[in-house]
Length: 382
Ligand SMILES: Cc1cc2nc3c(=O)[nH]c(=O)nc-3n(C[C@H](O)[C@H](O)[C@H](O)COP(=O)(O)OP(=O)(O)OC[C@H]3O[C@@H](n4cnc5c(N)ncnc54)[C@H](O)[C@@H]3O)c2cc1C
Image 1 (cartoon, rainbow, N blue to C red):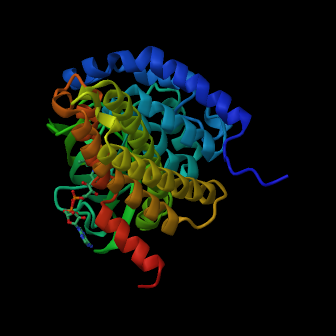
Image 2: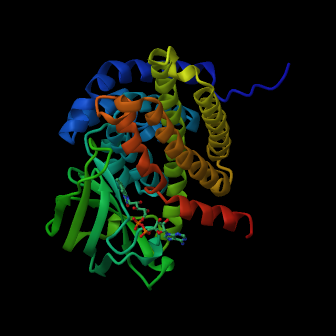
Image 3: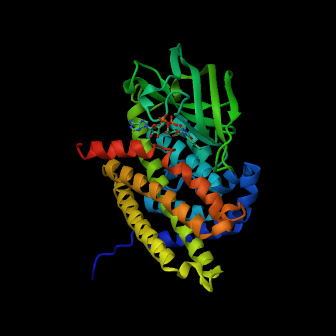
């Protein structure tokens, strides 16, 4: 018997079906409403917590399910069917970007205080790395944490922080040491401390249902025990944490591309011009065939990266390649799927119009395409 190529077992598929059923019943019908409102209900964090979706691969001891990475892949693929990318991003930041590093490196106290309530959806989490003067160049972070007695005193600013306006705590990158990457540390940071403020909610091109904030820290005091991992090892901790984040971004990009293509094929098959369906014209049949082939290639590159990640093997090369390829491809797919929709592609009631705006973020957030190329080049010894 030949080796099985499909990475998903029957258990993964059963989980996928359960996610899809909830997404289609409870989320998709509200996609437009939440996008227009610029927010989704806070109670959804609780709902996701009840469903176990924030703790899929996190330890059972802290309320997670302790499952493998393929469950996360299936979850993220199905979440895209909400057609509300802002909601998807907020929820993936909570479960797959802000808390994995606490699960990996946190003390029992930090896990009890931050990880467990985030997994239950009781506390909202955000990952606060980027600053007004430091995005791609993480080593240039300026927000400082100064040790004073048994406290850290935090001063500085963070920007573009997803979930930032309503986060109960941050996984926060700060400078505790010398300039450069070697002087960074991570803190768990509750947002109810004096001196913390949400300066503003940023208006974005897409992903409207997700809030993105500019945050200020003015002499904020938190206990020394909130240090996450080792002092001045924050850069290395972040680089490890980025792997899960970038893998999820690649999964989202592939799933979004597949959904846009399915929609375009359906619409182009129904809409007629010059006596025949638009999608039956050779120019479109070939364009769609090219995209379907490229997306399939991106999907399997992403699965290869997921396999390495799942086995705890080095995966920076493959995850960076997958994010680069899948997120760049989603731009071209979005453009052509909108084009095949004609005028309907330009009105916001059509899913592809919102998807076109939303996928634009994928080559920017979580490490730009240019940064991915740098990482690939470095991994190849260039
Ligand atoms: C909607 C949204 C949500 C976000 N959510 C979060 C979040 O939750 N938490 C968080 O910490 N951050 C978040 N970010 C920030 C995001 O990760 C950064 O925007 C991203 O890392 C790029 O940083 P930058 O914006 O400072 O761009 P810059 O670093 O200023 O880069 C600008 C351009 O220069 C290019 N460039 C930079 N360095 C190089 C290089 N070495 N070689 C070639 N080209 C280069 C970049 O690729 C880019 O094209 C979010 C951003 C957005 C827009």
